[in-house]
Length: 328
Image (cartoon, rainbow, N blue to C red; front, top):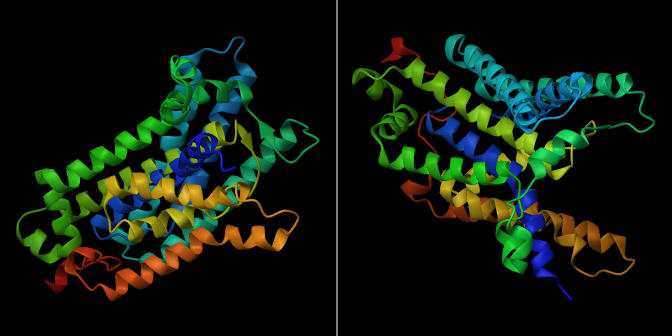
């Protein structure tokens, strides 16, 4: 039988990297920047946290919860911030092509993560191509203390680490800021018509820099969550798969609404692991077909959203276009 109680927590755990990536990319795209480097940003955020955690575990005589969490978290945010600054410098200041820059950053981020991840694995003389940070992971994976005494309710709603709840709160706050505040209104104006926003006295460069960097830091948290929580502190090169690209697809799936991303990411997370719960016997080809479900759903949604040509379902008008003030 299909075990829903065990399926939902695994689907939620699978969804958090997607939620962080899609929330960060939604914020970025709202200002008109198309950052296809999100997969690379997630890699850099993850390996930066791993490096910080590795150095702390190597030099700490006794592990303490506060530094064990703050050190990798700070390293993750710093690495992701630097990726955001690099993207903004190339696309906003130097006005490089956003599509090419994003793809280049994805390639760079994956290579950066694999290089330093491989270096750490060699330092540990591990017999397997991975590094385990189980002590630090234990602090990230710690669930709410009362979850175990609440039965299936605790398992479904309260059995996650703090980064999972943080990701949901960030998505809700991002949705509120974008739709209910003056800052969000100005940000959307920059994404829709930077020339008009510039004429109204809005600092286009500042909005693009700040928004893109914040978006990258949020996406980087998704990479850190994957390693420290979902993967139990185990880093393996190329272990992320295509989660970064699915996060970008979620932005279109949710029509640029971070609050909708919460449920949509859980849906995609469930589709991602559904093949583990559907009986298929020894027929491996059927399991491979089940693995295609997230991508099939993405294609269907893209087709439907393209057919429903409503204004509110369209991306920001200046998405992917560099702003030249001289052309006003």
